[in-house]
Image (tube, rainbow, N blue to C red; front, top):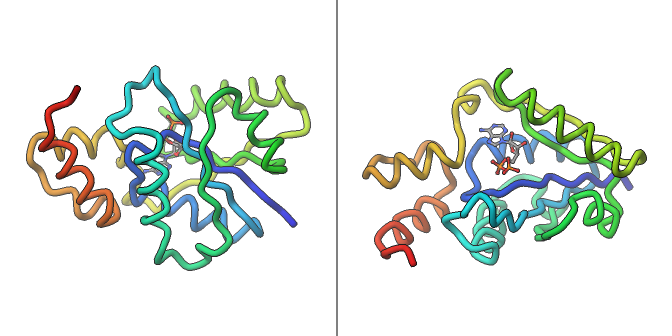
Length: 165
Ligand code: ADP
């Protein structure tokens, strides 16, 4: 059983995340889609909302029965261990992602030498896509239908209509 963990903020999940997840499912038997609490990023959606969105987003994804949606706070490597996942999946969009991702991967390896990170590249038209940009477009009233699954589009509309606490 080859199990990988794909961690992220997923605030919200985008088609780029889903593209990486689909690629990971071609390589691994099971993928844990792990939502980080990430309070220092001041997420728009709560961790519970992001988990629910991820569950809804993968419903129609081929291979979704091999995906488990989880959540964690604390060290990713500790969570990977409890999930018995020896591989971390991360996405690389452009060279600009590389420096931070390399640092993260090497630090995780320092913390747990038996856990490796593999990087997957998305389809080229998702290389400019990020959750932050999608939130900015939605906030400014733009159409994000091409960038996120319908559940996330709906959630963005609802959330951005509410005043933030
Ligand atoms: P984090 O806060 O951990 O970076 P994100 O949800 O922003 O969480 O991203 C999770 C992972 O998915 C990261 O490795 C990021 O590079 C990757 N990712 C995000 N958007 C895309 C995309 N459009 N294409 C490919 N990978 C992506």
